[in-house]
Image (cartoon, helix red, strand yellow):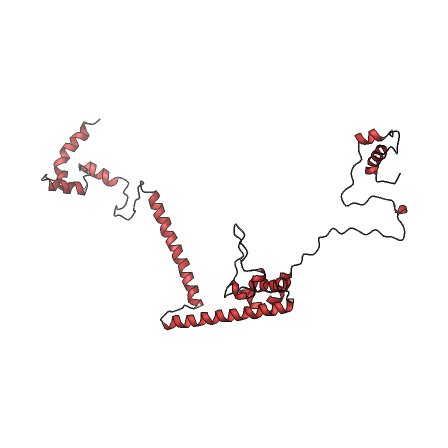
Length: 281
């Protein structure tokens, strides 16, 4: 019987019994089936003693590292930014949306000119155009890259000239374009105004929450607090207090009712007020 690993001995014995090579079942067969040996860990070679290994051969450790990932676009992109380093300073949004955008319909053998994807191409458009020429038009990568860069520079130059003349035309008609410093000051003033507006909104929200609460202004001419001494002095002098508001006095005077001021009413009511105070226990 061929030498096997410990976890494969009972399997080999079962195959030999099915082929009638082994007539009688071994004594250990059922015990091994009930208690099978532990499987070896994955990718682990069988453990053998050093004396069994041939002296001329050395075991090589299996490679578990992933293979390097290579894309042709990365090579073209690296060379493109070496030739155009200032393109890396252009702001580009890298925020991903919820869905992946569909690929541009112009691709493959139909894509023969970079202008087919717009008159203001991005660096990524130039990189994909060079790779597309190399893959679908059987063009050498160096020639494809040279053609893609030439078309990219031509389209960018045309776009720059169009923007320059459009600005000159707008200035000729009276448009004033603020400088970067003026635009920065405008943004700063907008931030300050938004902060003041936020304070006003917070104050209005506070007053709205206090709509049904008493909002007392301390500077409404109430005078100083005398701890009730003025009230006690008037009581001892027999002055009867009256709390008739001014607007009710005006309504009473318009209705033809005689309204006497407090100073004239004090002398007439002092005697009755004194009697009421004397009658109370």
